[in-house]
Image 1 (cartoon, rainbow, N blue to C red):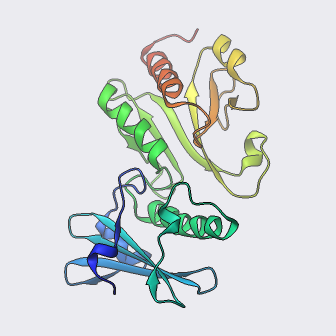
Image 2: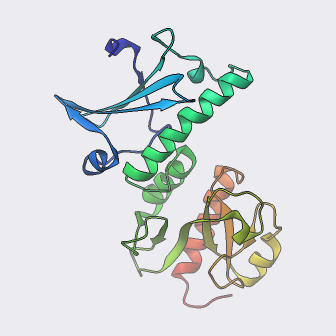
Length: 232
């Protein structure tokens, strides 16, 4: 392997905290003081190596197989071109699979979701939970005061909420008043509550389409309703 200075250390926004007990089942191998995983990208043109230290620090090294040199353009934010885009997409796809399989939040990872979960934890002291132990594609946040849900996370086919596409998407259901739900649902950013009472719940996509401050406001409203004894 190349020298340690050529590894790219990931930030919390690039990949969630990984759980050590999930690494080997995914395919990581433990060697001395770290876990290592390797996967070929783009029909063997590149080899992506992922290292997780004993302290949980995640680093990546992308090697160009032909030149046997590290490739770094996928890390350059303003790098453009169809080929660079393909590399970035393939690289991110591997990180997404690792995050879903080994991350502490399962399918619900990434900087957008992580920021939201930190807000909930810091503001209300609540954490994401997986009440259906055999289904890591569904989770809830509920008030530790009365155990009522005020956010429900799911991974569904986009057609479930009226969107096109073939790949599963991550959504979140939030609680609202009948008047609020009626006013918000537009079929573009806000959708009728999937698998919930559509009069009092609505759905958003966890793709960043709702600005974080706006999303935090919606969380606050949903939390407040979860504390109320009566629906309005």
